[in-house]
Image (cartoon, rainbow, N blue to C red; front, side, top):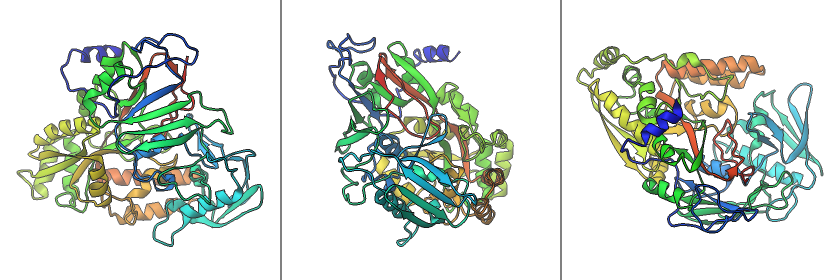
Length: 516
């Protein structure tokens, strides 16, 4: 059925839209074994053992992984950095820089034994002092909120030549998940511009607003990457993606629109996963009229999330009702998805009760390089008009969105997707506590703060999970945002390439991608 939908979309004259960049021109390519190009490659010569990946935005100004803000930065640099632990596509955590660990009987002391032979990309061996430095750096609160707030639980950290011992102030069922934080060399001070990690790919160069180049790290401790070189091409002009892919200039591009995927399916393998994002109409709870719960709830009743998925995404996507996506199975609460079923009369009544019987005008600020969010906002505009709310879309560049909306909190509403930095409920829910530095919607709810404190104090996984679900219900009941979906992730992969894996977090692992 979905392939039929994709084919039908070819007949529709819609603007080609994609959440990734593209590369102008053409590129000669040859396969690793010297064979002719696979179907879909227009080059006369066989491809080299390298690929170009299209992405929609430049990375953060700093490439230091401990400072990363944008999901797109984490997505790319996942290939460069590793922690003591690392995630798997199945959602497990396995040792990486660490060889193994032991947990004390009282569950407060972790002792990690480092893996022998692990090197940084600059050729220096990883030592226990580098691990201590990396953790202490992320736990440091001397200048305000630490880079990783969860590490405030670290009471003491010590090391000898081969082991690192971390003692917590109390048991913490989520702590291990935070040890995916990148291990960095202590005596290296150029992470902002020339990052050095331990991952399967090493950083080579960056041309701002143009590309990022990675190469295979031949001294990698684990299974080496198949590809020798990967170029991430940045192009925020989404109109040229089809030409770039079909010309051979781009070999792989994630986050495609259904329209674009339909136009590529004959020449490319279209892989389907999920983006592991919470897409929503995020509301500035400190700005009128969204400081009134009745207004926020009215918008929830007016927006038809399944209608958005059907109209803008040809049925692809999973509707959600709070700040959790389905891949986090034990936390995801399907019952919240339909807490606000479309009800225009109820929405109008709530607006009238709040003092807006004739509706009001509002602005939806959307980053201009994310077509799926633009498409979502366009459908929302039409849906809100049915209750007398006039919404205007304001397109801004990604850098402006980061500075003005995310950091400056100068907005009324915005459509974006929020990701989890690691595989914990806390990674998605902490941002809505009133004192969180990344609480860009200015959500302030005493009950929610109390629940979050209770979750942090819980030593029992089942009990903590129950509290996190209460937090999700609180966000839904108080209509903190208008929740929409976890977007489907359609990825165009040039025929002849294989090995792409999807993760339950927002990353793009290229270490397993290879030519057949």
